[in-house]
Image (cartoon, rainbow, N blue to C red; front, top):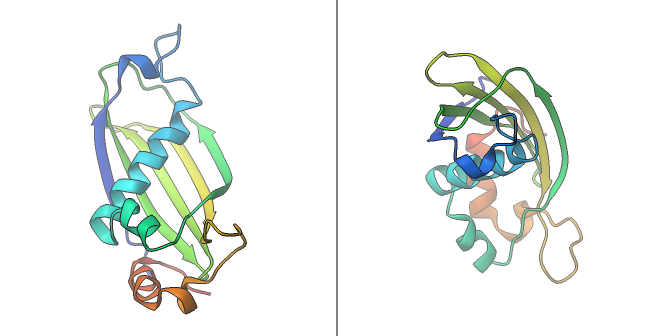
Amino acid sequence: MDIVMWSYRRDVNYYETDRMGVIHHSNYLRILEEARMAWMEENLIPYPEIERRGIIVPFTESKATFISFLRFGDTFRVDMALTRFTGLRMHFSYKVYNETTGELCHEAETVHYTTTREDYKPTSVKRSHPDIFEQLKELVSDMD
């Protein structure tokens, strides 16, 4: 199945940089989260609505490779996709590019699971929220 790519763009903020003038490595997780929240809003439903419906989607794992630098004022693009969905776990992949140069700066993967605030135990959205399950199924490139 083809991967459904989606893009998020913005400029690097000054507060995200370190003394070397580049984005501090810890800020990449925040950028990926911003992109993921924007992806959910555009392709699924806004994350606050997901929470109002009783679902939370905690982050459980990440893997990242730093390739090049982004500096204050650079415009970047995050190309991302929901690459795997089990009904319980979601796997996302990301590539962060400098929009001006086209250079790949960062590659990452994150894993999340669906649960409720009551017990934080993994909860299948297939059973609890079949409408959200069906929407996610349409957006994923690999379905278990």
